[in-house]
Image: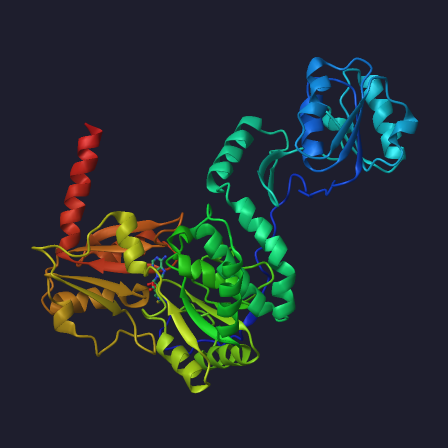
Length: 489
Ligand code: SAH
């Protein structure tokens, strides 16, 4: 057991690397082909579609095929963009000069090898249909909302899976996005000219994106541009601090506002308890700093965190102070808000799912009950020095008809439950210790007010934990057990 009176070693806030990149099977790159010469040789089954795609990208496609299929012959009449010229003869090396992209679509492997070698000799990008071993680049599945283009590859691992992913993305991106994308392209220069500062431009484009998502099928109009420029002009300038609730761990419990704040942040100051998956939602360019506050182990001093937050915001940064659970529950948020106010820094709070809510939800436990618990209380398990807080309302903790959730319960668990029982809590009252609530390694130790502490010690579990005590939990527990028994029958 840690001696709660030992002073904690201090640590300084430290910069952490943003979420690393996982290995990539292939690098997606996008090739502008408008007005450029492309060669396709051969007439295999895959040829017509490739020619259409290349032409759709605005390319000038020369097709060399001694015996074109009917389908390939029909292509020049079917294209929507670009230009396709069909030469009814075998390709020659001279045909490849000046082509930026060469596609071999021949049946014969030897011919394909010769074509690829000749094409590489001219410096063109090379693809050979259905011959991955000869390809410099491969075609992916496409979702087309030009100028927004999504390319999908499974690197040959699972084409059907890839098609389903493509269908899902198709469904997610309304067709009207094309018009908004085109408007973005047309308006970009004006926006950049009017707002040289990055923060303003980001403000503009975020509002623009919100509109596109809200009304994808409406044609964007000059009035939209004027309105958005006006809003950006009127937006508050300079740095600000947002206290954001990261929730108990499961990233899907983040609010939309939390997500937006993370995407907006220049700097994110986060606690150890914030799950790493949450930081993945930050912009890649954002600085992330661990200002470790764990409740045990080395911690950064609160004054240092406040000073850092204020200093970063004063230098014009959008600072997110990312705290586990809800920022206003046992998070010393009051001090951080006060520090910002005193320094004249605008500060806002984005609520989060507190550990108690996360734990209750993932266990399917109602915290209140019409008969068993009309009151719900959140209590801290230790005081400033780490000992059992003397100033807790002990008679409230001794009340058997209330649900009590104790944050930071581990160091004083035995003493707290013992004292609650001494104050009148029925020893048989159900009690749970939930470790790592909502995380993949969530674990629960179940017991009663009288025996939970021993059970927890025996279980030897690690991680942030919450104590939940109350008769209401028994009702839920009974129905859970009954449910399990029913299912087992
Ligand atoms: N603001 C946070 C609480 C911060 S105090 C919130 O609203 O949840 C830190 C304590 O929260 C931990 O000691 C632990 O008791 C609890 N806690 C945070 N995340 C938890 C999790 N995933 N599972 C269980 N308890 C958690």
